[in-house]
View (spheres, rainbow, N blue to C red):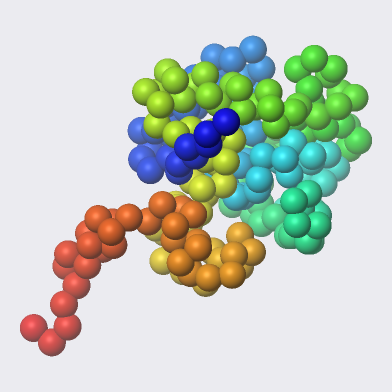
Length: 185
């Protein structure tokens, strides 16, 4: 299987994904999964492994499945939406329960991947996969802060180059960032 994961680069792309997610069989769950993903930068497997009780704090600590490392989630800016989503759920429930076995198991990465690939097809094969949530977070965080070192730390990457390649910073974007830059003129 070839993975062609790309970040969502425009608000229109994000809104298009939200449009399709709001029309799935489980629109509230699927939309919140996407929004939490693009606002935290977590891998899909880590998102799906969350229990409601973990999200009762603004800065919960989780252990990443892939790396086994502890990670703090900074939910402060989106916490009202988190509270709204979990308000009627029990602490031991999965945040994203399985569509087949509601409540006793979390949704699977494979099922989310299939959903996202169907949406990707509707969007013209733009490279939207489960990993696009993490890449989108990285790209938008970098655009807002221009702080590649913090982003490296958030992603646990070993170099700036890896992080730039990961979020898809292109030479054209780097050039655009320098259009109005001049010193001493």
